[in-house]
Length: 237
Image (cartoon, rainbow, N blue to C red; front, side, top):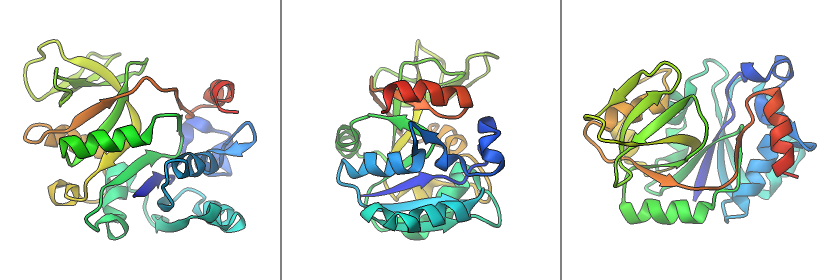
C-alpha cells in the first residue's frame, strides 16, 4: 500500500519555526515529524510514499536525500508553484496514486499510534471510497455520524454552525484524526478543481455517497502549535 503524506502547508500556527522551515521538519524529542510518520507507517509494512511539498519544499527534499529516503520509495508531488490545500493536493498527486489500489492519506503534523492494519481492514470490509479515522476528543470542529458510522454532517463547536445531509437525529460528534484510507475511485467522484479542502468535498459527497468513520481510541496529537510540541513529547519519545 502507498501513503500520501501532506507536507506542503505553511504551518502558520507553528511560527516562528515555520518562518524558516516546513512544519513537517518540526522536531518532537529531536526527531522531525516527517521522519516519525514515515517510520510509523513503515511499521505497518508501508514502503511506498508520495509527499507533497510547497513551503520550504527544498528542505524536505534535502532531508529525504540526506537520509536515503529512510529506505523507502518516495515520490515528490511538487506544489511549489501553488499551494493546493488537501483536496487540490490529492488531485495533483493523482498520477502517483490512481493505480487501482487503496492508499492512505496522512497529515505530516499528526502524531498517533492508530493501528493502521485495523483501519485498512475496516475500509476493505465496508468497500467505501473513503474511510476517515475519527475519535472522541476535544476539537473545534466535529464530524457527525449516524449509528452505522456513516458521515451525515459537520459541526463548528464554537459557532454552532452545522452542515447536514439530513435532520440531526442524535448523530455522534467525533473529531477527524487526519488519517484516511482511500480507494482511487474517489478521483472520479471529486468535482472541484484547483485549490480546495478534501473535507469540503466529503461534505458534498455525503449527500449521495457513503463515507464511513473508523473510531479509534489511540493517542493522537495535532502538532500544529508550539505548545502542542510539548504535549507530543510526553507521548512520543
